[in-house]
Structures are given as C-alpha cells and as structure tokens.
Length: 458
Image (cartoon, rainbow, N blue to C red; front, top):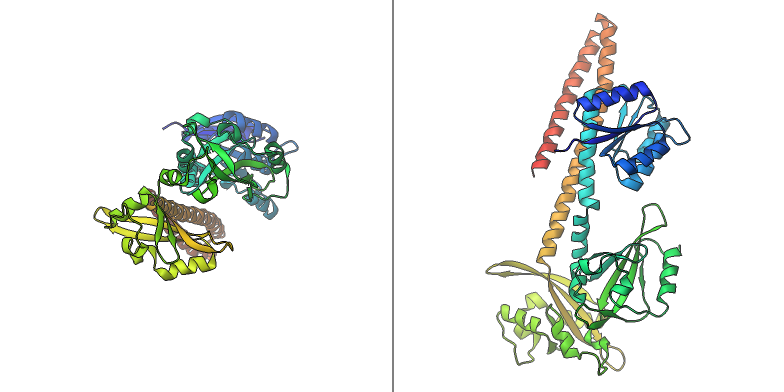
C-alpha cells in the first residue's frame, strides 16, 4: 500500500521539524510544510495530500480554521487541527468547520497515528457513500426517468441507463457535448431561458423548472421522439452558485404524440416501449396493449395474442387490483403507483405498477386507465444495499465519535490521577479511584475498537 501523504501547516519551525520526524517514523510521507493559511490552500490544491495537519493559530491574515474550511470545500481533503489552545471559543469555531480530528498539544505518537487513521477511514466512508462516481451513477440509475447531468455550462457529464436507452447514445458519445447540441434539441428562446436560470436567485437548489412545451429529442439511430423537458438546478452547499444542472426527459405518451404523417403512429410507438403497457376501460376491458404486456400475461399463465380480454381474466386481482381500484383512480383523476411481488419458480420478482387516468371524454373527464408495469427487483436490491451501507456508516461514525469522547475522558482521568498521586498518601484513595476509572475507560475503548473491526468485516 502506498504511504499516506501528509501536509503540515505549522508556523513554529521546531514544532514542524519534530512533527515531520514523528510522522516519518510512523511511516507517513510528509509532502510539505506551510507557515501561512493562504500558502496552505495553494499547497493542498497542488500536492493533493491525503491529510492536512493544521495548526489553528498561524501567522498572516488567515488562521487555520478559515484555511481548513476552504481546503475542505475546494478539495475535499480531511483536515486535523493541532493546537495548544483549547478555549471554548476556539473549539466552537473549529467544530463548525467539521474537521476530521482535533489534537491538543503536546500529543504522543499514538494520538497522532490514531487521529490520522480515523480521519482517513471516515473520509473513505464518506466518499464511498456520498461522493464517489460509482454511488452517484447507482443513484441515477435508480431513477425511472431519463436523466442527464451537465456542468453549469450545459456540457454533459453523466447519463443514467434510461437516458442511454431512450436516446441510444452511450455516455462516451456525448460526454462534454452541450446538452441541446448532443440531442438536437430546439427550444424557442432556449439560450435566453438558460441564461436566466443560471443567474436567477429565485430558484432554490433542487427546484424543478419545466419547459413550456414539448420538444423533439434526437436519437443515435437518426430518428427522434417528442418529450417533456424539466430542469433541476443543483447548487453548492451553503451557496447560491450553480454546481450542476439535471435534465429530466419524459417521452410523450402515444395520445400526446400527434398524428402527423411524418411521425410514427401510436401502434409503432407502443411496441417500441420495452415495459408492459396497456390501456383499460373503467369497466376493465383491455383496449390497447403492447407485446411486452402480452409476454407478462403469458408468463403469469394467460395467452392474450389476437384478443382484447377483460383485465381480470388475464392478470390476477392480487397483482393488478380489482374494479374498485380502477374506479378510484378514475374518480380521483390522479396517478398512483403500487409495488407487487410475484413468486416464480426461478425466484421472486418485484414490479412497480403505475395507474394513469386518461382524460378521453368530451368534458375532459377520465374514462380509462393506462397501466405501466416495470420490473424493479434490481432497484430494490440496490436501495436495500444502499440503506445497509448507510446504517453501517452511521454505526461506524457513532463508534468513532464514542472513541473520541472516551479518549478525552481518559486524558482528563489520567491528569486527575497524576494530580492525586503527586499530593501524597492522603490522596491515595482518590488516585486509586481514578485508576479504576482509567481501566474502565480502556475496557470501553477495547469494546468500541472490536465493534469497529466487526463492522469492517461485514
């Protein structure tokens, strides 16, 4: 394993030299020593160390707390504070920057080693769960719609699997290409709209902004399809600055596609849908379905090729719902989604069934329901895995935090015990009590370390 690289930020030359010797003795590589906060920020960006050991009180206009905050925001490098000052105000300012450690001088090799290793582990866990490209891609692929992520200038950085499927473009073909150019999207007034979005303070992070009309999205095959386009602005934490732009592409249903001679007809579009799709009247008669729906019915024991059956005769009520559910969806005129588990001989499969009321009456009232059925077994497994990892991380963080508290309590107890021994035989009982407390805390520390080791093996 490569040696961990440490950047020292310390304006006392003797302390910096001793710290370097200690770190190298522990097996770390010291990549530099800076005296001022401004220089530390530049060095962190250039050298990209694994950990920064930051003295709080530095020479110059910027202290270590401000420098640490900027390093964490810009480069996501864990920072451990080293300081001889432990007053309440200094500690409160330091804690607000959420450092990975806080060591009071003078400290031992064990203090230094344990703080560095815990900081590295905590940063690895945080990066794996919150910031790694693999986790981001997994999260995007759990979204049912087609999602495209771009930088603030609209250049494509990520596509989820659904976006690749509906457009036919893999990420390698469109990465770095402006969104509108990559998919041949033409929106009247588009440039002015995007400019307003990026400079406006009216939209908060995560707000969805929908374009006013349908757009035509180009496909790799040369064709295109009509879709609704929405945009979400992703802002930097604690700032109004735009960090990413998320585009959600929702292909229009056959009913909204239009019937121009130069466009595919509804039947063609219906068959192009990979998931089971059917339209059912309020009375339960199936009036429209695609091949994927027919295959699902056959898998569940009913062949409906060449017929327009009643829904209850081809799909069990326990799966698709009874007449009351269809009446309810139409009466409420609101889409609903349910998850159903079906046990096959090869194992259980989880389906998401979406019921969409269709306004097909002259008065705009709904008379039928569209069924969209999608297998989500893999998505559910991924979600469970994600929750399990998050729970493990929380347990690990809790154990690490408890170890920090125990270490602090241990230091205070040892100091009290030393004081009692120095006072002589009259304070021997007090010293023995403190010794017992030390042994208790050491036992708790061993328990927490075993708990962390067991979590790592899971």
